[in-house]
Image (tube, rainbow, N blue to C red; front, side, top):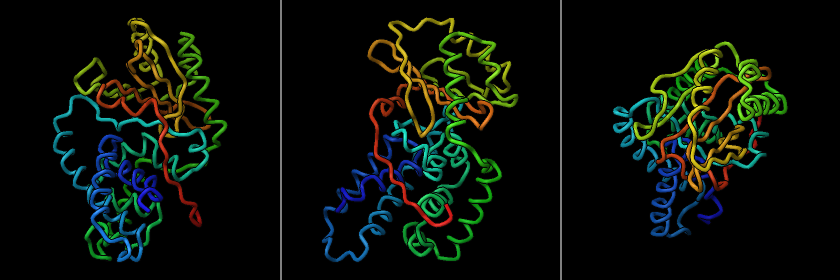
Length: 292
């Protein structure tokens, strides 16, 4: 029964914690807790397991937030490999995107959990209240506040998945070919590049903003040789991405976010602690809900 819900539980934990490593630990801990329960006494296993994972994920997030306060440079989520069809599911693709996960970092842990359970998985308010140990009224208020906060920073707009992919492909082709002018032409004027090295490897410690600045930054990176470099195209967090290897080791991943016309966001992750989930695809849970 636990295996039946594992992809849902991992997705909830990842959405709340922002890292695959913490999410795996949360799922494993939840499995151990479930193994001590008489399943016959549980009327709604899905709700029970979601409650267990949510509480463990919240504990993990609260502990991580204290560490992230001293993080060097921008903190980015841990990228994960996703199947290509994830991009076709609007709700899950948006929820897994780096832009969304970065915005979720600005919510309180409880608000983040409520938003994920309600907006991504459409859990009833009563089940969310039990999972977060909050009153029904408090959960409704947090859900409304979190939704408004997220939409103000990550507004929804109609996009065409094929056109998005085409824009990202043009960017990646120009980047790999070293064509800086074509690269600049694919970038939105207000595009933003975030780079996460965690103080362990070289990375920009501040956002790089604007097409011209990003182009010059990437041109500078291209001049730095990577020993035994090879590059693979991938799909990370439902987004087109490059995985750059140095020999058998992943050196950096670059995720590309775009609208129907231009590249709007680039996320470079170099922190070696965050590159362990970039080579093996994981199962993510998607539920089709009315009106989404």
